[in-house]
Length: 379
Image (cartoon, rainbow, N blue to C red; front, side):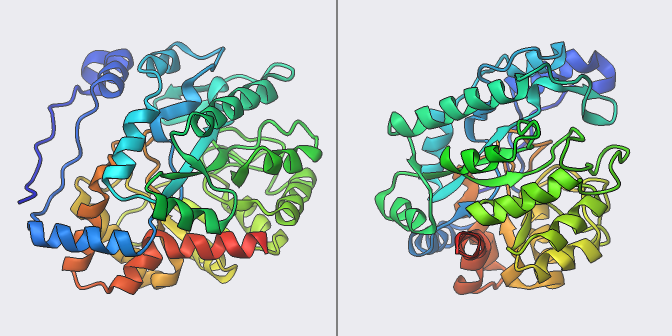
């Protein structure tokens, strides 16, 4: 039987300070609680489904490649980076969990972020060419994972099927934040040439593209340059992720885009639990109308167990239907995740089966909807 796992006792932020909390959480992260029981037969059925249909995680940072070669960090993020990267272990987890492919996401604004009482925010400006230099370092480190044979590079939808059949996980490169453009629209095409297939235009820093959901607006939505970026992303075939964008900016991106637009890791306010990082039902519906999806996000915001996360997935299904939901784990860079290891994917799928969801519908959730949008973006 797969039974409930006990959470390791945490250290309270108020009791020992940010340094002790971060050091503990990043160096000895507690395992997530499953919150339900599952038989070996149910788990075996889930593994058979994962063999039949490719599973794709639409937003993740496997092994935290982005911490490598990051300079100019605040002391708190230096502490966060002390653990280094651990891609080999996470790829082994992907194989054990039958995950065909996932996002390997760079983090454009990591060097200028800091952790405050309200979460992450940008606390300084980039120095001249710093953002592009850091982006190139991340490109080099991501490509090294492919060159050493750890993962296979996903450049087109057919590569996901190849990865699924080969047993070597596929990696599609994505970038969280477009801070490295520096007014140079030609860098959009360069991003595609570097192998990137998804962009989240903003992260935790208001940039030249538009405003973010967690800070006071400066542009009143998408900028003129941001509009050019969206059009160019459409032209070259890079998927657009509106996660982290302010509502006005997100609506502007949807209006400007001729291709589907997605929100890879969030939830909808009004569906049981509200949070500033979630989006409105109106914005969610506009995302679906574009042909996109929402990636169900297992952050510890109103969630305590994987069972709670599956409840949240079902909330999205009830709200939007099976064609508009995906899995966006934010693996290895999430806040108190309740789905924290790719080895747990069969457990998640097994519970969906147990709750009565059909194979073909689960197939859409775990990969089919992403592949559909990927195809439409490259068309």
